[in-house]
Structures are given as C-alpha cells and as structure tokens.
Image (tube, rainbow, N blue to C red; front, top):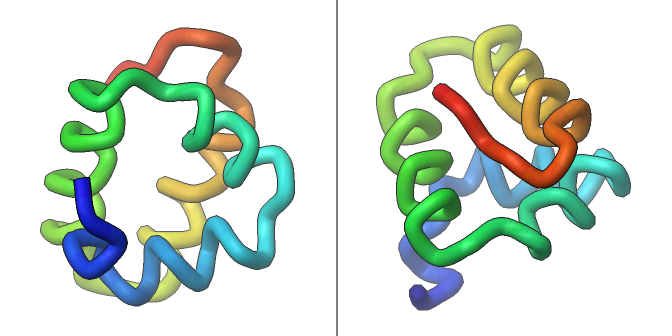
Amino acid sequence: MEYEDIPLGLSFGLATNVRASVAYGEMSESERKQVIEEARSVNSKADMEALVNRIGRSSGTWSM
C-alpha cells in the first residue's frame, strides 16, 4: 500500500499518537485497508481522533 492512499487526517493522527502508530505498523495489509476505508468515511476531527485512539488501544487484532 502506498502512503498516498492514507487519508491526511489519519496520517496526522498516527504521527501524533505513538501507540497508534506502532499498532498500525504491526497490522496486516488487510487490517490496514480496513482502517483506511473507515478513515475515509470519517466526517469530523473528533471521529478521526476516536479512530486513532481505538487503533492505539488495539492489541494485536483490529476490529471495526
């Protein structure tokens, strides 16, 4: 997956949340695609922050 595919808000969120960034890096390609698709449907900063926080709390498995 190319970095250009990641929505800007998600990129920013991952850059400012170390736990989420590490968790995202440990995800499978399929899980990353799920996260990106969910991020594309986010309509507010608060919702994006919630998504990034949820990524940071994930422990080895991602669920939407």
